[in-house]
Image (cartoon, rainbow, N blue to C red; front, side):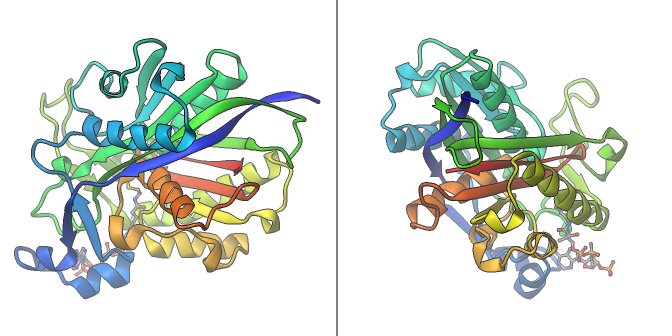
Length: 325
Ligand code: ACO
């Protein structure tokens, strides 16, 4: 049966210049490079400059994705931007990206699902393309988590970094089978009973401040392995493929041990997992498009490959997307 699919036709990323190695935290916290590396896999991360915002990073990633696709900003009719660190409370940071890239028509909005944000944004853009509400979409994940880190809390501040990634999606007519290009399946969930496991202790309507990130890491870890495996299996089933057909897992980069346990449960070898956590840390909604962009530019991901994207974050919110590249 013929069907419209959303295919990825371009990908790009942007990282702030400042590299922050684990050793920098040793100078003011009771922590060590060894602890951070062995518990999380992180060796360094990037922090944005004081005058560099989420929209700035996102716009640069979007421009790089557009240039990879060969599509002009004027031919894009939708921007879905995933971020939990917006430039302003309103308007949507996506509208700032829209003007910064020179897009004068179409529509742009933000999606907030913390570390699962890019998955949620892709699901939204995919649905709008399939329904005919958009033909070409930019899906951007951009974060400046360094702005909401409590630098006296060693349990959280060593984990996160700043950055942005973006993909260009285009409506493509296909036969509708798993061999065709594009997004093959999506699966998303949230469960607000767990919202206190990972949150920011401020907000417009509560404290009238931005607040700082708080996390019960052990509990989130426990949920992560179970929920990521379940959503990955669901997306694989909906795509009508077998786990063995997956060429690459492109997971949200929160913790190497979570990624490795999930790949093992799915029976997918570790050399088929895209890993960037060593150099990026956890960039929340930016981590998946950043990983996609790096993996494409270093020749790992090729046309026709099947990719499994998956993420979990605050909410709790989680989900997966299966794509034929
Ligand atoms: N340096 C040194 N010691 C530390 C540090 C640190 N940076 N951080 C914690 N410790 C200590 C703890 O205080 C604790 O000491 P204690 O036993 O004396 O109390 C000990 O190390 C063990 O702490 P745990 O929290 O049990 O360590 P764990 O092995 O669980 O690792 C971590 C912690 C890395 C946070 C892990 O639990 C994790 O990755 N959780 C999941 C994170 C995640 O996936 N988040 C979702 C996405 S993020 C988002 O949506 C914004």
